[in-house]
Amino acid sequence: MINIENVTKSYVKGKKSIDGLNLEINNGEIFGFLGPNGAGKTTTIKMITGILNPDEGDILIDGKSIQKEPIEAKKNFGFVPDSPDMFLKLKGIEYLNFLADIYEIPNEVRKERIENLTKKFEIYENLNAEIQSYSHGMRQKIVICGVLLNNPKNWILDEPMTGLDPKSSYDLKEMMREHSKKGNTVFFSTHVLEVAEKLCDRVGIINKGKLVFVGTFEEMKNKFKENTSLEELFLEITENEK
Ligand SMILES: Nc1ncnc2c1ncn2[C@@H]1O[C@H](COP(=O)(O)OP(=O)(O)OP(=O)(O)O)[C@@H](O)[C@H]1O
Ligand SMILES: [Mg+2]
Image 1 (tube, rainbow, N blue to C red):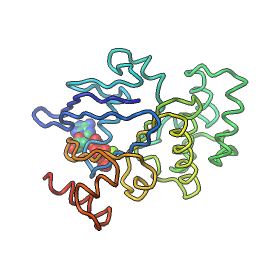
Image 2: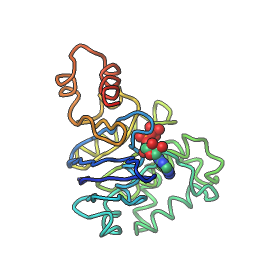
Image 3: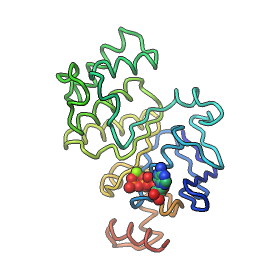
């Protein structure tokens, strides 16, 4: 469960990139975070994960404040950033073992988990190569495997489908479904409205740092216009706020 409480953030004085954001993402829920480029999705995700501190407000992950109890809060989530370009000098297997060390995953368990996950994402054969030799999609996959290794209750993903081939994208979506069905939380940002409609229990739409809609697609259609395409609805909601 993730609670975002009255969060505000400015990068530049006098210009709020996130303005009074309140959002509760429940256990057992897949929540899609939508919004145009520059709306504040990544900034929000960086604050949830403790990369950035809010100017005001707080964020709780399973009841632990990311600012006041960062280590405890960080034990409760896995994070896939929008750019998977990190630890490029490490081999795939070194990266996964490094994460398994951090999360204190016992040797017997980690070997099997690494094998299962990397075979599922079809990068098992590449584990002995340096990550810098990987394609964008392969880098994305190794980061996802690293996150899932620890089997965290809350998944936080910034545009996770970008760069994945159709099979991997399908597998990831299935995994998100399974994860939420077990009573866990999945929070992800996306630009692909069709993915959000099919996958999410609820969505939030952010525009210029402000939340302009939270609810189900059904509610979105009822609140705004029926018989309009998803794309038109999205454009209308974000247009009106200018
Ligand atoms: N490091 C930074 N310094 C100054 N301004 C920033 C910085 N990072 C983001 N911003 C600004 O904050 C706002 C929100 O950016 P953010 O990256 O959160 O958007 P986003 O919704 O993730 O967009 P996208 O869909 O393009 O990924 C934008 O106006 C952006 O210019
Ligand atoms: Mg972003």
